[in-house]
Structure formats: structure tokens, C-alpha cells
Image (cartoon, rainbow, N blue to C red; front, side, top):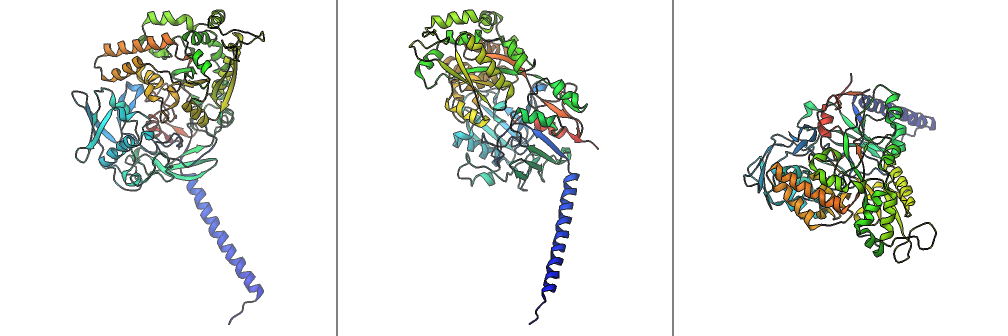
Length: 565
């Protein structure tokens, strides 16, 4: 038997190591070269303390690039173009004459990212899934859909529970998932979908770690000729300070966060650093109508108390200090956005305007009339029973405009004798606590819509006070008349009827001062023109420019972008 000498073995090992190192270096160089040749768009649609491989489009904890980019919708209704339908997986829809059914026509030759065909069965399955598992139905589909079935190869018909002229706007919000993957999932609510299969332009998850991930091209995308960017990069950004420190250095291409003094702290650093701040919806203070303490709950139930809190607020100061002048004070006591002021009865607006005006002395009188007085002379008001009266304001950690607003509100309420402690928690924990009713006061913003209906529906429909729904109605105030009006709005056929419903909703919510509207903010949108062109802006208002997960038009936006040569 041949026996190699020690030196021969050593030389052999060194040679093998050198060959391996050469191969590894070549592979690494090839990977780097490939990475450099790809166009990568860095996006910041939200903050997070933890990056997890969750791409379940039904989950509240899914990564913020899941919707649209992985799971393409049937239709996108373009809110900047008077709700013009931008057809995606569907090519058309038709309401029945009696408004009790709707048919969607699907696009031919669309393929899932694993190469299998997209069919009407996928659509039927996705809606059946939401009906079977209420936790997946975050848009309230089941209240409208009685049944869904396919009609031929490219049509899906929805039989509705009641007439609804606007049902298409709701149905297209439900994500469409591949039946051949999801039919074998035992618990779709907890499924994390680590290796997603979608129809959107970016379905391949690469290099995911604690610092972020790369989301790259769907090899079978049906509109690949219109996709000019290879990958989306989602970096972990923990809070507003982290965001500002990094966007100033040009790290991000497309973002949407609050930047105080945006001209000085962002735009002045480079001619490529651009922004657009379209009008947005209001930020409001919520009372928890089912808070655990029964005596505080009884106080919250009194409209006089809620009005006293409202009159303690200096709204312009909140804008000047917390929002750095980016916004306008709320004047509508219902919280309806100022851009819909013409929907409100001007008499109602004037009637409730005094409660939206800073008047701390009248606020003090209101509190005293409720028995909320300083009984022990320590400078703070106690409850009628003599017990301490201390409240907290819950805000998401890292949302600096919200956090500063809460601090200012605490000072303003201190002036009228109420002790308030701001509390900041991580965003997911913030949502969980609102959902569970584990707070006394909290701040929230609200989604926009083409009419005031989306605001009133998301904020005051008691149906949406269940755990699977977003945070907006988690004040737990309920009104059967409000629910009735919200159910009627989609069923009426004339503009006059819709106006009458909104005016009554406005009157009820304003008259009860259900929340305390603070100020109407702006939509935050920043973009960097150094690496990409085609950005939507005030001179190119193709669609909403937002990167936020609640903005379906972001799919149109990403397809309009092109790398600079």
C-alpha cells in the first residue's frame, strides 16, 4: 500500500485549499458582479423591531412588502384619478342590475411564481378561505358575500347578502392566494408562508436576516416587460430617529415617514432628495369605552367629559411643535377630513366648533360639574368617589410626531387638572393593546378614501371591533344608528342619498364627540432621484405615491420606475 510522506500530504492539503479558495473567490466575485448588475430599489414602508420571514397576506404581522408586490390584487382603484379601475388579475367587472351580485372577468395567461397557471379556482378558494376562517377576513368580506363560484374558465360570480353598489372596492382588497399551495395548510391564520407563491412582480425572497431582506423578480410575472427593477430591498428601520439618520445619507430610494423640518433635515442635503406631502386624514385621541376601571369607564361615557378634553387642546401648537407645521387643525368634531368639509352640514360644523376650540376655563367648569374636582388640594382632580384620576396615552414607539403630540396633550390636560402619562410601546404591541382594550387613551390616524365613507366605516362601524380588524374602531363606542347608516351607504343609488347619510353620520359622531380630532396631517412621501426615474409627484400625479402597505397604487408606482443609466 502506498504511503504518502508528511510533506506530500501537507502539499496536497494546501493545494486543495488553494483550489477551493479560488473556486470560492470566483463564485463570490460572480455573486458580487451579479448583485451589482441588478437594479435594487430600497424601500421603507414601515418600521420594525424585528424582521421575520412572514409573508402570509392575511396576517397582521406579515412583512410590509407582501401585498401588491407578492400578491397582486384583482383591481386597483386609483384614488387620485377619481377611482379609475386599474385592472390587474381581473380585466373587468359587472354589477347585476339589482346590485345583489357581481361578476369579475379574469385575465388570461397569468402564472403563479412556481410556474402553475392562475385560474378562477384560485379566486373562489381565496374568498371561501376568508369565509371559513373569520380571522382572515380583515376587510369584512363575509358581511357582503353570500356565496362565490366560477362561471367558466375566466369568470367568478359573487352572490351578495344585500345590494351594494360599491362592493367592488371592498372585494378587491382581499388577497388572492394559490389554491394548490394553501389548500393543504392546516392553520392558514398562523401560516408564515416563508416561501411565498404569488402573481406579483417580486415574489422571490433572498438573503433574509435580522437586518432586512431582498425581494426579487417573479420569474413568471405576466407583465415582466413593464417591470424595470430587479429587486426590492427592505432594510430594518426601528424608529423615526433611525430613519432620519439614514435617509439623510441617501440610503433609501422610496419612503414615507415623518421628517421634522423636512426642507432642512432632508431636501437641503441633495438636489436628488425630493418629497411630496399630499393632504391626509386626521389624527385623533381615542377614549377606551370599555376600559377596565368601571369609574373611569363611567366618566368616559359622559359626552361632557369628552368635550372638556377637546376644549383643553391647543391644536395649532400640536401642529407647530409635533408636526413641524405640516398639517392644519381639525375643525370638524366628527374627525372627518377637512378635504371633505363640503360633505358636512355647515350648521352642524358651526354648532360643534366651540368644542373644537381651545377653551380651558370652560373645560374646567365642565369637569367640576361632573364631580371631577381636586378634593385633597394636591392640584390634581380626583374622581367623584375621591379615588385618584390618572390616565395614560398610548402611542407607538418611534412615531416621533405621535410621541410628541402625547407629551403636549399631557401638558395641556395638566392645566385643567388631569394627570396623564404618555406610554410608548412597539407598534405590534400598540395594535395588540388597542385590540384587547388594554389602554385608557390612545392616538391613531385613519385611512383615507374617495369619499368620507371609508373614514366613518373604519372608525365607527361596531363590526370592526373584533380582533381580526385594524385598530381604528378599537375605542369600542357603539351606535346602532351609525351601524345602520353605514350599512345603507353602499346600497343607495343617488348622490343626494349618499350626501344625506354622510351628513347624519357627521352629526351623530360630532354631537357625541366620540373621539377628539386633533389635526389633519399630510401623507409622508420621500423619494431619491439619484438612481431611479419615473417618480409620481405633484407634477406627475399618476396615482397615490405612497409606499405604505395600505396604498395599493404602490404597485403602479413601482412598475413606472426605471433605473438611471
